[in-house]
Amino acid sequence: MDMSTGGLAPAASKPLSGEVFSALINLSGRRRFTSQRIVLYALLASQGQEGSAATAQEALSLFRGAHKSLLSEADGLPGVFCPELREAYFGKLEGDKQIVAFADLGESTLKAIAQGASQSAELLAELVRITTPTLGILNAITGIYEEQAKQNARLMRKQLRGVITDIDTINRQARMVAFNARIVAARAGNAGKEFSVVAGVLSNITGEIDEMVAAALAAAG
Image 1 (cartoon, rainbow, N blue to C red):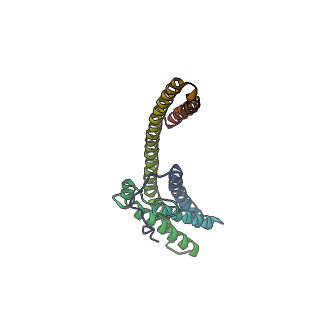
Image 2 (image 1 turned 45 degrees about the vertical axis):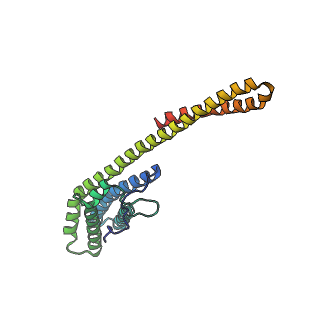
Image 3 (image 1 turned 90 degrees about the vertical axis):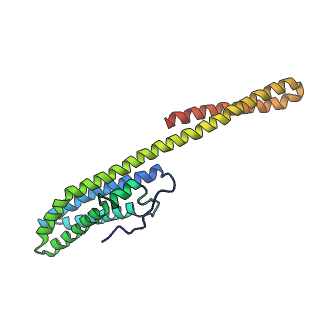
């Protein structure tokens, strides 16, 4: 089963949310976890342990599904969204090719075990052999997702600080307007009372914004 044709995204058109990165990291972690379950329960199935074959098949289905979701631009996920992932999946590491080969071998092994085929032992031995290098690839790719998530978080904090700085600049200007309005209202005497009230409200608002800006800057850290 070739899972490399599932609608790849050339690149993320906008920053990804924290929720999307969490989903990507979880899916990548699921591949690592289920890869080990496939091998473990295939071994148990070869020894005739009841229910092991079904558990291995379930793990294989989850493994394939996670891989397809990570490569496909669908259901709110971005597919292969950065050069580092494209290189890991389709470059020198050949991640996609190796991951698909592992899944295909797992499927062939389980089928041979279920049928009591003579080549089941040989297939199982090969599955065990490629488990460690496959896990190395899965770990490397998971590391890329984690690093991209960190970079995205740093970018979002930087952008947030920029927006907050702009708000703070506007707020300082509003404070100056309120201050000048108070002076004008004082000079106008009775005629300027209503203007003075408005200036007072504006001063209160700018004070509240100061507090919110300080809190947001602390959160953006």
